[in-house]
Length: 460
Image 1 (cartoon, rainbow, N blue to C red):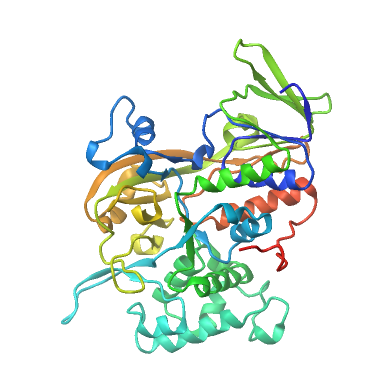
Image 2 (cartoon, rainbow, N blue to C red):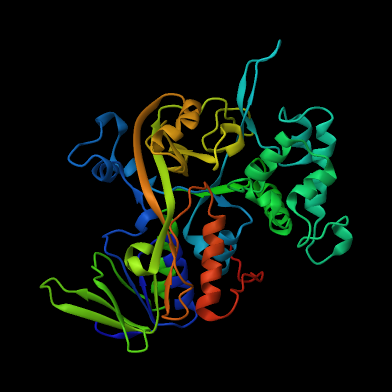
């Protein structure tokens, strides 16, 4: 370890592993450390024994749940947008070839509708992602459907640099509320577009420039076209394969990995710039890996480099059946799905997210399902905040609840060359995490990451 490196990366979470792999590919000498004996950090995938050990130390999982080899439960599960930045990074680096994918069966939004003469009460509805879906959706009345279709066609035709596609909308000057008003959309339609299509986490976006939200809607619709039915994909055997894939990429390009390696702190020179990472060997003797730059997650950064901006509650629920009223394209029970409960429907400030995957993705024993419910904590009783989502799940066999602080870096890292990633948000997708990686890359290298994949590069 007592060598000199260009970069030391601390923690093997997905963000750190992507940056480590990319920097190795770009010729940097990288040392990657983790205090744990497994890859993934906060977003690791655990077998059933390790899951019990983490949440219920000293106890054993019930025998009827099956063997360890059947389980890969994500601690921070997220779907991947089929046309999103993470997929572009996977294709550019060719890490995609280390993974197998399955598309998500469906994306749903919570909107309570009372029972009528010919129908029972409904709580969740499939998110209409195309004009055809819009025509069939019970989320909108007969007069609203043409307005939604006009809006969807406007989104699909939108080009940032072509004013003739923008119908008089200025992406920097007009707010998203003004765009909705132009198309005459009702409040309930605005609610599911903003939260289940643009994937905004609250309604603050309505008063902001419309450009980013229009592009988020377009990304969602483009992603639906990749596989049909849903814009999301998920790797077989769980998300643990993602950091491992980028770790393999780094190792191929001479990156050095050390798991189970304690990190005691960072060393700084007289000018206040980082110059090394401190550790110790098995005998307790101090070791220092010299470096010009450190990339790390908040747990390695020290209190002076991060601040707490809130808390996230996550509940891992093992189910014996699919979530009721969720369907795949053929009309059978969904083996994977996302449900978004918009804040306005629950009189909250933040959305609640449900993400379900199952034995079909080789992350659970046969006929078992894993649903994770998450949100930003708003009260002194975080688990009670998840009750509206629990009611949608059906019978829960086992439940593991975790409340964690959300840390963000206090600076951009350029002054002392310590670049800290933020904690993972409660959303059920990786889009914000991918954008953070690209922003960190630009701060670290001074350049945008080129994500264009030329045909002979893409050996999919």
